[in-house]
Image 1 (cartoon, helix red, strand yellow):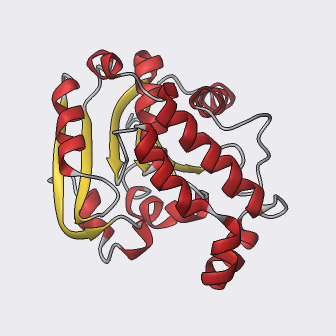
Image 2 (cartoon, helix red, strand yellow; image 1 turned 30 degrees about the horizontal axis):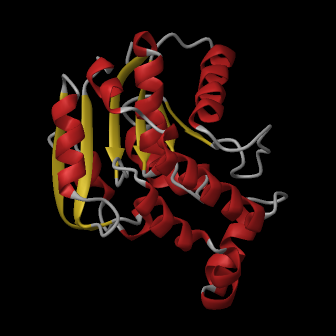
Image 3 (cartoon, one colour; image 1 turned 135 degrees about the vertical axis):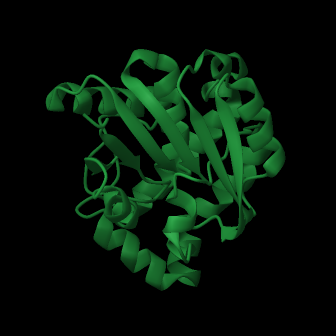
Length: 225
């Protein structure tokens, strides 16, 4: 039986964001798009943290009575998948990431936090604000922005994946990074891939950070990549 796949969205995203990925995979295997806590209308029982996301994923596996899964994670979702693969190696068959930020410092976090200023989004990107209000209803999308900014601050303060953890990830990991991605660097992807015993980097020519702007998801998801 083919191992089922869990698809994880990025920051401010939702399960809806991964529908294109699901359409690609569902002909090959069972694929679920999940809303992480605090996203897609699913309330979070506490502040965002790696442990919060880990617990949500573990509960899903228990509810579905699944012993082992694969992950495809976009951006923040990829980071959550790597954390889970570290913490629960016996439950993860493989991890594929796209556009996942892997190098976190206080300076990096401070720069990223500015992208999640709800007031600026409402003023300068009203269509995005409307979209966030819709996909995260009945939750307050502005609160989600603040929770995400706080989470990024914590990652920069050392509450993310410790460097030694990557060597403990036993499953195959493919780290995809687009050459037009201005958030994630090739250097950080290569560094982490070298730390993972069965890790590798795939560069995607012309692919930007935003998954919604990827012209052909087949380019990213093809097994040959």
